[in-house]
Structures are given as C-alpha cells and as structure tokens.
Length: 377
Image 1 (cartoon, rainbow, N blue to C red):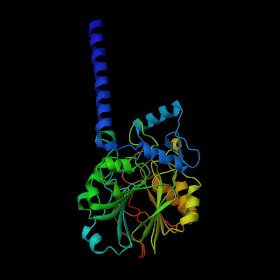
Image 2: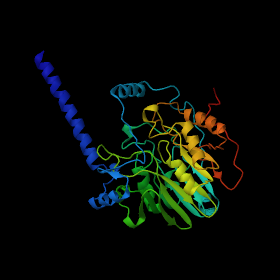
Image 3: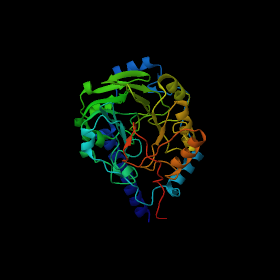
Image 4: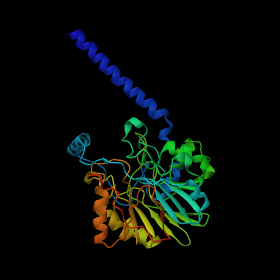
C-alpha cells in the first residue's frame, strides 16, 4: 500500500511540475504576451506624474484587493454560474457589405462588432476601435469562454484597408494578438497608450506606424484630432506585468463630429473633466458590462455608466462591453436593462444597435429594438 501511495504521489507531483513547466514555456515564448517597455521607456514614464514604483497608477486611489472570503465566494459563483449568463438563442447579427465601406467613406457610420470592438467611419477616415475579433478573449482558447456568436458582421479577412487602429489598453478582450496579426498589413497607423507600443514592436510592426500616447495628449490624424484621456482601470497581459502599460479612453474629434470611446474603467471625476475639456459629444460609447461589486472601482455599474454620459455632456450614449462574452457574474442582459432604466431617469438618449447594424450618425436613428429578448419564449 505504501508503494502504491508513493508511486501515486510521484506521478502527481511529476504532473504538477510538467504543467508548471509548460505554463512557464508558454508565458515565456508565446507571442500572445507581447513585449516589454525598455529601460529608457520606463525612465520617460517617470515624468508623467502617474507612474510610481515601476507601475502606472490611477488619478484617484483604486484597489482591486479582495478578502479571502470574497475570493472564495467569487470563485464559487464562477463555478456555479448565474442564471441567463449566456444567450439561449441566436443573437441577430447584421452582415456588412465591405464594398460599401470602401465606396461610400464620406458617410459618418458606426458598426458594432460586440463587446468593445467598432468600425467607425468619420470625415473620410476608417478607424477600428479595440478590434478584438477572435472567438475567445484569452491568451489561449482553452483559457476563456467562447464568443456568443461565431458569425461576425464582417470576417476579419473581409475588412478593407483602414486608416487607423485605436487601442484603449492591453487586456485580451481589447487587444488581441491574432486580430492584430491579420490587420497589421491593412492599417497605416496604430494609436496606443504608453507602453503598449512594445507589444506591437514584438509583433513585427514598424515603430514609425506606432503612436504611443499619454493622458491628455493630442495628435492629428489627417483632419481628425485624437486625444488620449484618463480612465480608472489597470493593465497587464502576463503574470508579472500588471500596470506596466497605461490604460485610458479616447476622444475622436473632427470638424463636424465629436466622439468619445471609454475603453474600460470605474466611475470617477475624470468623466466631468473630459466633458468640460472636450465635450459636448455627439456620441459617447461607454463601458457597461462585466461589472461586480467586488471590482466596482475598475468597472462601472450600469447606473454609473449613464451618469458618466451626463458628466461627459454626451448628446447620445451607447453602452458597450457587453453582448459578446461572459466575463463576470451577472446575466448577459443585465447591463442593457439597467442602463436603459437609468438613462431614461437622467433624460439621456441611448442607442443599442444590433451587432453589425449600420448606424448613420447624420441620419435619423432607427427606433430601439429589443433584440436581446428571446422572441421564441
């Protein structure tokens, strides 16, 4: 019996060692994890005023620390799941005619791919925002949940040449290696937060095509002004690089249109500061999903998302960061139900288009369709 037990323990620890060894190799050599800023880069970050002890920090105190009890309860909830965590029906997805995007670029249009991925055409420019277009928001398909629908409005191979790609931060559900690999030869410019350029360099993109931005920094892109502005969040792709790159949100301003794209983040006074400096906005795309009370400082609750739109002086808001993946412990429809209710109370106009639905900002917007409701029930 002792020999059997000893043999079992030997096999068990050998398996643990093998798994750890494979994990270390994967983290060390997989291109998914990107690159690291240089010593000169980090020396420059010291001058920003929001880089301390080797990491970037938020404008106001922000923590993700949880007690052991909260961690245990959260893990149990993830294991058990929650009701209606994923759709139990086929979500409608509108297909896009790619030739229209090429031949009719003067139209101001917005197309949502689900979660936080967008194609925006404004003043003759075609821009992709956080184009995570893979099926799993993780460094490996085994490490995350599948996209609700395999069908996308436009397959990544069908996307025509774009003028710019804008990235809010380096988490996997916003910056996807496979998507960038397929898009990098179709794109002239990449606009990214400080530190994130190291990932693109590691992925073989020429440095002159990468534009790293600090909070409140502006840059001209053709006839558009792009401003990278704060959010209240964090960053990291591996086990040891948390907050070594910056995170934020974006202002995209032209002669006739002004857009805000939130990326991810918790509620805070930065929304009013952005609204005062750059508002009003024709449309604000604002995070509303994957929240939980345990991490409410880095992901807003839906009611806060609606208030953020008010703070930003938005004329119209669109809730994002939902509709494609389950990354938290609420039902998949909870974000849209709650934010609609709060937006109505705040008299904030709201749109919630189908995935792939063409929204033309210079035309009368279509009536709100409750596409997230299962009509067959």
